[in-house]
Length: 298
Length: 309
Image (cartoon, rainbow over all chains, first blue to last red; front, side, top):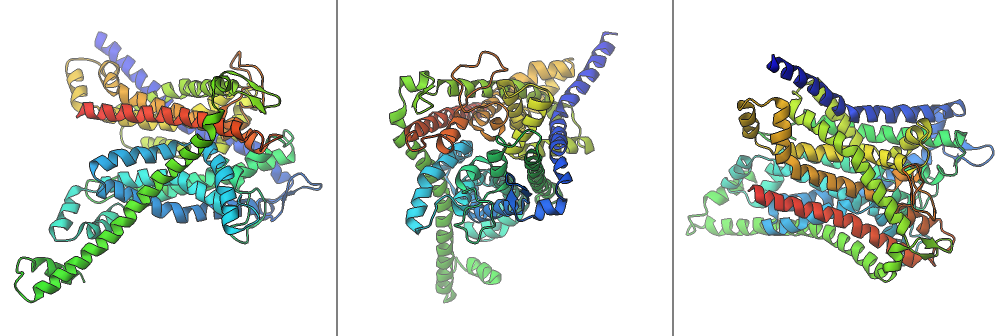
C-alpha cells in the first residue's frame, strides 16, 4: 500500500521534471512566435524579396526604404573575415591544449581561454573603439578605424574560445588507442596529429567552427560599437558596415512603437534568428550524423 | 612517402648500413617539420593569452585612476560627466541575481530530468535540440523577445523584472549544461547503493545524487551570474535606461546597468571625450566583476577536481 503510494508519487514527479525540461523548447517557441508576430506586419509595406534583397535601408526617410540586403551583407562579410582569423587560431590552440602542452601549461592556458570567453562583449567593443580604431587609422592611413576589419578582429576573439573549447573536447575524446597505434608505427607526434587525430575528430571540430561562426554573426555590441554603422555594401574590408544586430540595437529605441520601422527591425530579427538557427541545426546534424571513431563521440 | 617513412623507422636500429645515413636525415627532416608546426601551435595559444592581457592591461592602466570610493558609492552627476556609478553596480547585481533566481531552479530541474529520468529516444533528442538552439540565439534577439513578450505582452514594462526574466531565459542553457555535467560525474554505484537500500528514485536524487553533484552545479550557477552580468543587448530594450538618479525600490523600476552605461557614455553621451576616464573606470569595474566571478568558478572547480581524484 505504502509502496504503491510512493510509486505513484514518483511517476508524478517524473512528469513534473519532464515539464520543466521542456522549458527551453517552450522559450525557443515563444521567441519565434513573438518575433513573427511583431515582424510580419512589415510585409504589408514591402514584399519578402523587396525586404531581403532591397539595397536601400532608409527607415526614417519619407517615403522610407526597408531593404536589409546591405545589413545581411554586412553581417556575412564581418563573420567571414572574422572566421578567417578565428578558425585557424581556435583549432591550433585546441590542438596545442589537447596534445602538446604539458599538464602545467595546460592548467594555465585553459583558464585564460575561458576568461577570454567571459569578457563582456561591451568591453571588447569599447576596446575596439577607443584603442584599436585609432591605432588602425594611423597605421593604415584610412578615413576611419571603425570598419569591417576592426569589427571582424574583435569578433574573432569572441568566437575563438567557442571554437577552441569544443574542438578541444573533440580532440581529447579521440581514443588513446588510435594515437598509440600511430606512434607505435613510428609516426612523429606531428604526423599523428595531422593524419590520425584530426581526421578522427573532424566532426567535433566542424561543429565547433559552425557554432563559433553562429556566435559571431549574432554578436551585437561589438558590431554596434566598432563596425562603423554605414548601411551600404562594403567595397573593401576597411569600409564601415552595419550588420543586422547593430541595426536592431541602434534603432529600436527610436523606432515608434508598432510603426513600420519597429516591424522592420523585428523582421530583421527574424532573418538573424533564421541564420543562427540554420547554423545550429547544421552543427547538431554533424555532431549526430558523423559520430567519432571508436568509443569517442560527442 | 608513407612506405619510405616506415622503412626509415624500421631501419633505425641498423645504423651501420649505408641507408642508415639517409634514414637519419629523413628523421631529422621530420623532426624539423614537427618543430615548425609546433611553433605555430604555441604561437596561436600565445596570441589568446596576449589578447586577454592587452585588453585587461589597457583597461587597468587607463581606468584605475577613475576608481575611488566616491566613484563606487555615488550616483552620476552633471548629466553623467562627473560622479560615480553606484546605480549601475546595484542594477547589474540585481539583474544577474534575478536572472539566476529564475534560471537556476529551472535549469537544475531540467538537468535532473535529462540525466536521471530521460531515456534515449526522439523526445530526448528534441529537448536537446531545443537547448542547443536556445544557447545559439543571438543576444539581441533575446532583447527583442523580452521587449515583445515581457515588456509589452505581459505589460511588465521596462523594468528590473523584465530584464532579469530575459537574462534568465538566456542563461538557462549555461545552467543546464553545467548541472548535467555535474550529475553525470556522480558514479552510478551511488545511485545503485541508494536504490538497493530501498530508497525511492526521488529520495535517491535528493539525498544522494544532488548533494554529490552540488559543487559542480554551483559552479554552473556562478558562471551563469557572470554571463548575465556582462550582457548588454538583452537589457537595452527591457530594463536599462540612460539615467536614473534613484536606486531601484522595486522589481518594476527601470534601472541603470554597468554594460549599458559603458555603451551610452562611449557612444551617445554629450561629451564623449570628456567622460573617457569614467568610461574606462566603468569598464574596469565590469571586467573586475565578471572576471572575478569567473575566476572564482574556475578555481573552485579545479579544487573540486583535485578533491575528487
